[in-house]
Structures are given as structure tokens and as C-alpha cells.
Image 1 (cartoon, chains in turn blue, brown, red):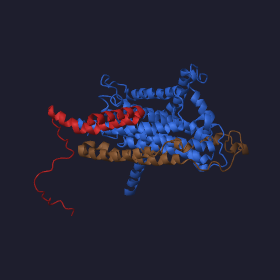
Image 2: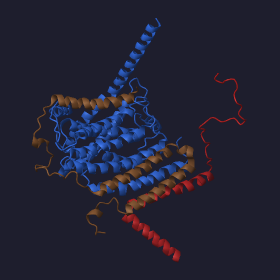
Image 3: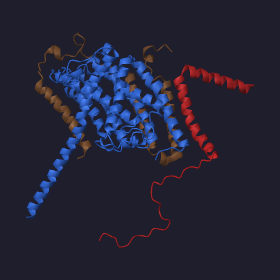
Length: 346
Length: 123
Length: 76
């Protein structure tokens, strides 16, 4: 009798655990699938918008207005042959694109899409983001080294140097925001911006920050890794089919992710100013966050259509000799203002 | 098991699943010219890829290590600036000024300017 | 005479630096404003009638008496 009772209890516990895991899986799918879709649409947005900047039509055959183009591309690339160069280090050759994809998708785990609508409301969210953006360098480095090709090696060296240099600017710009909020949690940062978006008092910092994320996602004007005219395709010269798709997905996922983080850090995330009190039946918060993210995605493509590519030494000098001194100056100035006017957050 | 842990399991699974799909669906017929390293049409020159590279990249990486550490060490100060108040702030400023002197030294020694390597007699 | 000369020459030097390497010059200026503000602004504000805010308590106040060991709750 007692044995049967414990059996039922154990069965019950097992069922509850399985249901919990399924619910977790559904939560994760609710984030990852829309992210993958948004990445796909980011590629078509980029092509259409670049076409519009150059007064072309852009892709418009597959689906309405070319909307199904990214899916057609993805299918084509999945069906292509994966070429593994004979001199390459095989394990690292596959591990590099996989790690790029993983590290750029994991960043979505802590983004709050609404009040309490995050996969994990992590109290050290900013540090998590910084850690993942640092780890993103490994994909580039491993890809260049493992492919054992001249172009891939040079491209990975350059883009590693550029990414780690601009990481400095990124983390110091984020440090300034942390000084104003006194918390590393994304929700707190958004709630503090209810009175004023940080882009207004911190406009110069926003400019550094945006330059840093342009370099961090290696977009034009800082896309040295794929300087087509000199390095063929940079660090993924040897990668084809699905490994190439992973680099592509990783790059565009990090563009959307960094646009989203910019919207959270500087444009108040899911909140609008008090004028629009957000208590209607439909929760507009995630739509507002999406619209703000779209603004920065537009900026990314706009810069690509406008600016020419920098040379490598110009890139390094812009970072170390121009941006970093000004960043250091602002890191001293802003806490001084806070301390002297007794505005320090607690 | 919480959601973040699930994400940590799910994303690598997704990556490997897509790779498996490619293995299942795509043709795989390698030949010698296909799997050789890409050289813009020339035949491969062996021993060129694992050769030396400029020390400049290494210097940039070392400098990054120091300065990123410096900025990350300021994060706890930024979070607890209210508790440590003016005294902690002044200590932070002293810390920062010491590192800024290092930064000036580093710029002055020309560690990050690439042009010095090309033309040593220019300046 | 000597003093004005020094002042003028240092002014000329700063002007030259602002022209030659504006980034370094202005970041030095911005960085120097900070500590100067910390020293000068609170006295000015206090003269204009500002009193420092009370420190927000981070823990409950401890009682002023001596602690008495609690009896009768041993794990036996």
C-alpha cells in the first residue's frame, strides 16, 4: 500500500518535471523562432533598403515584394555541398560558425520584451551581454585559424583586432549608463528611463556607443573582415553552405540584438513617455520595443549605403587615439556631475 | 530547469540539427581542386598560412586586456556609487588617473600606430 | 610683466594644442572639469541654501542596549 503510494507520488513528480521542461521549451521557442524570423527579414530589409538608397528595385520576384527571398536563400544554402578544405583543422572548422551562431542567439535570453516578459530577468544582464559579445570574437578567430587559408587568416586577425578594440568603447559607454542607473538589470534601466530617455542627456555617449556597435557587429564602415577587394571574403573565405549560413545568421542576429539593446539602453526600451499611458487591453510594449529596434536596424543599413570602408590603421587609430580618450574623459565627467549635484542613484 | 538553461541547451541543439540536415540533404562529392585552399586561381603555396604575422595585432590584444579589465573593475564602483559616496569616488578617480598615465605612455611609445612599422625613419 | 608673459605664452600653447590635436586637448578639458566640479560645486550650492540629503538607510537600526543571549531555543 505504502509502496504504491510512493510510486504514484514519484510518477506525479516525474510528470510535473516533464511538463515544466515542456513549458520551458515553449518559452524558449517563443523567443528563438521570432528571432530567427526577424533575422531572415533583416537580410531582406537590408537588400531592399540598399536598393532603395541606390534607386534600384531590389529582390521582388520570390513572394510578394520579395518577402520570401531569405527563406529561398536559406533553403538553397542548406541544400548546397559543404566543402571541407583538406588542410583545415576539421573540428574547429565546424566549431567556429556554430559558436558564432550560439553566442549571438544566447544574447536574446535576457532581453525584456515587456514588463517581466524576459526569458530570464537576470540581475546581471549587462555583464551577460558584455560577456557574450566578448565570446563572439572566438568564432572569428577560430574560423580564420582553422581554415588554413591566407585570406581567412588575415581577415580574422584584422577583425579580431578591430572587435576587441571597439569592445573597449562599448563597455565604457555602457559603464556610463550604469553610473546613471546604479543597476545592471535591464528592467531597472528601462524603468529609470521613464522620465527621460538616456539618448537626450547622453547624446555624445550614444554616438560612441553606436560607432562601437557598428564595429562590434563588423558592419560598414568597419567591415574589414570582409574587405572584398583585398581579402576575398575575410575569415569565412573557406566556409560554404551551412557553416556560411551560421556566420550570416550570427552577424544579422547580432545586428538585431544590438539594435534591441541600443533601444533598451538609450530609447527607454518597451516604455513610451508618460504621454501614452500603456494600460490598454492589448499590450503594446513589445510592439514599441520592436519599432524602436527597427529605427536602429535602419541606421545600420543606412550607414552601409552611405559610408566607405576605413583602412585598418585608420580603424585602430580612430579607436585608440580618438574615441578612447574622449570616452575616458566622459567616464570621469559624468560621475563627477552626479557626485557634485548629489544625484547618485541608489 | 529554468528558461535560460533551456536556451543554453536548445540553441546548440538547433545549430547541430541544421548541420545534420545539411549532411542528410546535400550532395558530397569532394575532389582535389575543390578541397584545396582558395588562392584566387593559383595553386596552393604550402607553409604560407601558419607563418609569422605582425606583432601589432598582439600588442592591440594585450592593451585591450589591460583596459577592458580597468573598465570592468569600475563596474562595481558604478553600481555602489551611492554607498561609497565621495570617498569611494575619489579613490576611483585616483585609480583612473593612474591608468590614464599608462594610456598616455602607451600612445607616446607608438605601440598602436601602424605607420611606425612601415617607415621607421619617418619621424 | 613676467607673469603676463607666462600667461600669454601658456595661452598660446593651449591654443596651439587645441588646433593641433583637438581630441586630446578637449578630452583633457572635459576630464579636468569633473574633479574641479566635485570640489567647487557643493560649497556653492550650500551657500545658496542646499542641505545634503539624509543617507538612505541600507539596513535596520540596531538597538543601543547590550545584547542578551536568547534562552530556551537550543536544538535539543
